[in-house]
Amino acid sequence: MPVRDVMTEAVAHFERPQQGATALLLSCARLPIERAETPTVRELALAEQDWRALAGLAFAHRLGPLVDWALERAEVDSAVGGHHRRLLREGRETTAARAVLLTDRVREVLTALHQAAIEAICLKGLSLAEYFYPAPDLRPMADADILVRRQQLDSTTRVLTELGYEIIPPSTVQTVHAVPRPQGTGLWEYSLEIHTEVLSGRLGRRKVRRFTAADLWRGAYPRPVMGAPALAPALEDELLFLCAHLSIHHGDFCLAWLCDLAYLADRSAEKLDWEAFVARSDECGLGPASWAALTAAQGLLDCPVPEPVLRELAPSPRGWDRLRSAIRVAGIVGAEEPPSAWRQVLQRRAFLGTWRDRAWYLLSILAGLLRRPAPYHP
Image (cartoon, rainbow, N blue to C red; front, side, top):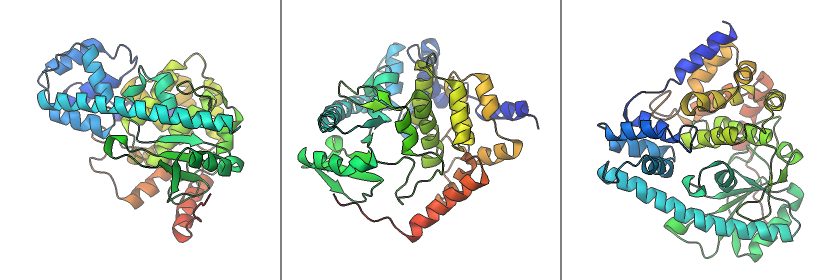
């Protein structure tokens, strides 16, 4: 089967619905986001609509604030949708309040780390929300992820302790969990995750053989977060990390994470070196992960990916067969019910490029089960 046939099948796989709650959800999130297909959003919202299904999908995919924002911009009366529209509005208000809390806390931590001469990369979350979303409070965040160098981990935890944080289990040298004391509850509950490695799970093992934290540090450049000094990976490495994090670390293609990479690609269109991105994807054995994530983002959200990029990353027909069964966008693409945990583990191998990479992935999972990593104690 030629590459173009794989591409044609992939387009059909991510074919967007033309009506109903799913169509309205995707219209609210689709690029270009500032326009958010306002006439389509308004038309779909005013048609007979299953608002319960819409709210359920929006919250499942962490898009509640974005949906409410798009409805507001489309001048859809707040009475339309009744109770479930109110739930979307309340969810947006809650996200905004949490964004203020996290912004203040992360700004404090990043400033303290900078004063202690500790370099920090702000991963996902606040950094993406500030630079690539229409407003920072449109991206829900449960915690904040910060990458530091392994040799500066002890210094980092000392800074956190001085700021009133406590290191809690399950912390390892790869991921340290820190919570403020006293800890808030509900809306005011949050945590910091301090990473020294990327794409490692609760089992403490790195899942991808050829993609490490060093790849993010290599091209890091200054990109302040909410006014605080911080670094960011090179755009190509950041996009690759988002593709791998979505495909391999989580498995399910949550629309919020697809929005992350779609909005980054859109806002950075003139700066992204797509040739370098393809080379890095192949070099790290993440070609299938990049292709699957970008194809889904293009098909569902109109992510502006050049066709030659997708053609170069496209898998073989056999690889596409493996990917098709592994790709699931809950309630939209793929199986209705999530597979069992072990089936997910086996399916995620499809996102890695070579048999060595797939073997490493399985061995890392087994090694973590057989020998738990030693807990980290500052």
